[in-house]
Image (cartoon, rainbow, N blue to C red; front, side, top):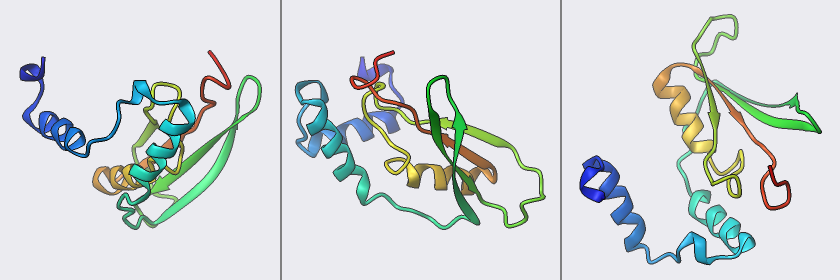
Length: 125
C-alpha cells in the first residue's frame, strides 16, 4: 500500500517508525495520551498576531475553540480555516496541535479556528 502514498508521506511514516514508538492500538488510552503529549510538546510554535481561547455552545456543554490570526488588523477580512484535530476521536487537544494551527495561519494568511471536542471513551459518540 505504501507505493500508493506520496513520497513525502512515506518519509514521514518511516521517520515515525524509526523512533521505535509502540503501536497506538497496543497502548492504553492513558498511555497513548501521555505519549502524544510528549511527541507534540516540543512542536515549533511560530508567532502569530494573536491567539484567542473561546468557547462555543454544544449540544451538552460548551466546546473550547482557539482562534489564530496571522494578520495584525482584526478588521481585515481573511479566509477562515476550521481545523478539527486528528486522533481517532480518542487523542488530541488544542495544545497538541497549537504549532500546526500557527503554521497554517501564517502560511495561509488566514484565520484558523481550532475546535476541541470531547474524546472517547469518556464521551462515546
